[in-house]
Length: 453
Image (cartoon, rainbow, N blue to C red; front, side, top):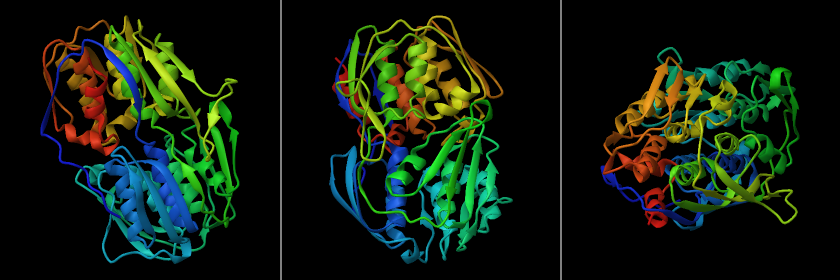
């Protein structure tokens, strides 16, 4: 596998935009891209993945799949998306290299690969950069050990690097996630493929279901039923075979969120985002913005029933216009459903009328940075009023933002949030370490220049 990301400047400068216009085709969905590559590695034979995200995180997963013995070929790419051809010996033919598997900055790569490796007859160490080494892993170590794998981290098994000694077969478990997490659920499901019996995962809040959909597309039977209090119970029999398929990755709704907010808060804007994934367990940012009063339309097929790609992921073209927003209450369940989009939602709240409260956002403290602290510091510097009470935020709207120096903290979602803020702030906004945007959205700053006028 080859291909490289261009170096980025140390500081980006953003000036206000007179108006925003245009159409954008976004990077392939990062969550789906990771899962596509991992499942292609577990399937014996040739898989084809079209339109995968080409950010640094997805490249980390592709590199791991290649290091385990699969052939990973970049067939075509445009800097934002890439088409892959994967030829794998299948789960039983994968072999660990004599060096750690490099997850870079990607917590998804580490957590999902730990689950996939847990049921394979090999030993591997998953490692990454300094930021990843500060990300907690205890939530996946517990259930994987309960299934019979030997999994060890550092600092009392709380942090990476993570060494996985696989066992085949594993034992199925019935597990209730203490904190709703699609990554924990997915790690258990990937391990459950190699387990004897029925693996059950119980969530108090339904998290994104990409793994379940993508397993079904590959011939694996997975059931999901409503649980008590709005949760979900997912079950899967072990011993099922993952088939190779051809698939296309939808546009990333988390990347779309930045443009949705940009157009909604700008006084003269209309943007159309093409081919965006609108999975019901992933579209919370759309629903939250509509609750705030955003003027947006979704266009699917002619009969309005929605369109879906070959892995069962619904897609739509979304048009968003200048809007009059108002504050809302964002519940812990809303936060769990829109965890990656909360930083940019905070910017929308700062420009909306009234007050927005965001409750139960503790998971944001364990991302690439402490996103609660980072977004509060950046928006406050820009002129917003943000109050933090432990893991809750209270944002008083109606701010008049003034350009200033901000710091991404090497966190892609903060870098892009402050860039969007710069489009509506008076004067000059600078962002330290803007290159982190390439983690999920290579070409973001090019797209920003393309739509501004």
